Image (cartoon, rainbow, N blue to C red):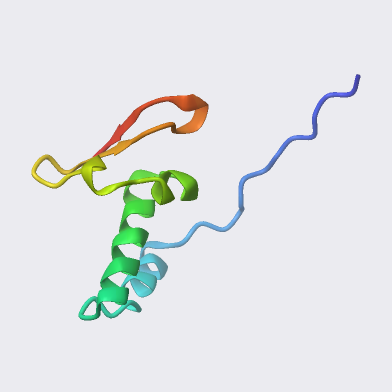
Length: 82
């Protein structure tokens, strides 16, 4: 049996300036813009996956401690992200 082909991560990583540009492109004064900004901030600050974010429910976020409880992360692990 042949070894599996190596999977490469995307080669392009946003610079700090590009990241800020994307974040400020959302108008946080509107509900949709605020939601989109929160989603992007959560992706970039925690590294969670799309489905992990999609499966979050309100009680998974502890605003007082600044912690997000991710259920069934990769490998069915429980992950606490701050």
